[in-house]
Every structure is written in C-alpha cells, then in structure tokens.
Image (tube, rainbow, N blue to C red; front, side, top):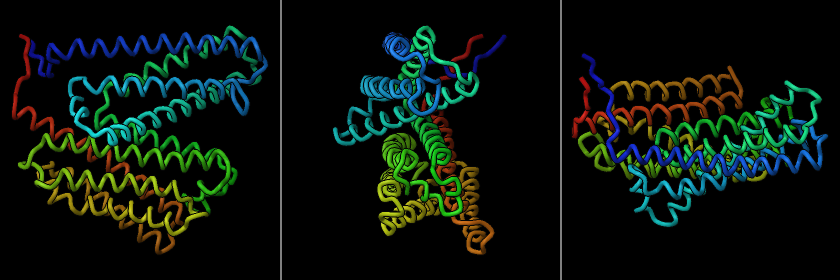
Length: 366
C-alpha cells in the first residue's frame, strides 16, 4: 500500500500546464520554419561562411535567435498574465508592468544571443575549417531558433520569483564572463572590475549593458518578491516588511543599473556612488533581517550572518593588501547575488510551509 505524499495539481491547473506546453511547441515550430528559411537563404547566397568568429554563420544565427527571443518572450509574458498564480500582475500599473516586461524581454534576448554564440564557438572549434553548406545551414538554423523559442516561451510563461532569481544569476554571470573574454585588455584584472566597461568596443557594451539590464531585472524581481511576501502575513514578517524589502530591492536595481550607465572612466563620482549605494543597501538588508524577516527559519539568519561576515573579512583582506580591488569587487558582487538566491530559496520554503498550514490538502493514493 503506497502513499503519494507530493501535492497533486488541481484539476483546473492541468489544462493550463498542457496549454502552455502546447503553445511553446507551436512557438518552436514557427521559429523553426523561419529559421529554416533564413538558413537556406544564407547557405545559398554564401556557403563559405565559417561556423564561428566575426562575420560568421554563428553570428547571423545569434542575431536571428535574439529576434526570436524578443517576439516569443514579449508574447509569452503578455499572454501568461492571466494564468493561475499570475493574476496579481493584472493589478500592476501600466508603467510598472511595462518595466517588468521590458526587463524580462531584454534578458531573454541577451541570453539567447550569448548562448547561440557560445554554441557556435564550440562547433567552430570542433569542426575547424568546415564551410556551412545549404543543407546544414538550414538544419542548424531551424534547430537553434526552434529551441530558443521553446525554452524562452516556457521561461516567461511560468515566471516565478525563484525562476527570476535563477535567470538573474545566469544573466549576470554569463554577461560578465563574455565581457572578460572579449575585452581588448587581457590584463584588465590588474586595474579593477569596472575597467571592463571603459573600452569603446563590444566588450564594454556587453559589460555595461549587462549591469543595466540586470538592474532592470532586479526592480522587476522586487515586484514578484513583494507579492510572495504578502502571502506570509504579519505573523511571519514585520508589518512593514513588504514595502521596506521591496523598496530596498528597487534601490539595489537602480544602483546596479547606475554602475553600467555611468562608466568609471567618464563618470567616476556617479559610478562610485552607485557601487557604494548597492553595497550599503545590501548590508542594510542583511542587518535588518532579524527584525524585518522575523518568521524566517533560523538557518536563513545563520546564512545571512555568514554573508555579512564574508563581506567584512573581504574588506579587511583588501585593506591589508592581501588581494587587489578587482578581487574584492568580484567577491562582493558574488556575495550579493549569492545571498539573493539563498533568500529566495528560504522565502519559498517558508511560504510553502505557511500554505500547507493554512490549507493542508495533500492527496494520497492507496
């Protein structure tokens, strides 16, 4: 006699999930057909293009992938606002909804472009000197655009706070690494992290653009976070926790975007103020946690104090000269986004526990 302890989706949720999967497949087929047409045209007009590099087949397909991601993410995010669990987005003001949509679309465009470029760099290294013939250009283009459309649609149609935090982490890491490997100064790390944004080339555009789009995504993240926190109630959180925490996340997003908007070589003061503002708000969130987030598990607060201690230790090691400014900036940067991921995980666990307490409805099959 077996018992299924995992919650079973309610009957009205199953058709919704099936419909989302179906729409994702339709989006994939549509993008795949267009990709096949684009690939065939490229193969017939220029069969000598290399797989990767400047002016390559991979570069063209990456641009097409970005276009597909833009259309699919905008459409999917708009359509999903009435899905179960997403209805709260209908109450957002047009401006706030617009900012959320723009940030989600931009992030998916950049991720689609970067992922496609990385894929073709790997293929280019695996098949050195292989020209792209019409058949393979058609197949590759169709498969890549189809996969991009499918994955992007599923991502935006089921957007949650945890999913958005993962998206933020992947976006920031991938954008920063891309800027590092494409910078014209291979010894950039001897200066500081923000030095990556001081060149008039694609690496600086990627670096500064990643920070700006990441800042927009953090402000969107704050909206989802506030909605999740309201479900916990005053028994678990301070009565002012929702406006305080969401506002501080918005400020963090603005400060992060400011670091990219004001490159250090052109606007030193504003750049430094943005970076310091981001760090100050982060430390403020850690320090205010025991009071504002009083119902969170004890393990969360232990983790938070660990993050705070890591910042202090890193600052001391930087002051005594154990490592340079670049290492200190990267460590603090990683700690900020690492804490965000931990915070969201614990918030999700707490919210799930509250939901089970309020309405215990696990179904069992004997």
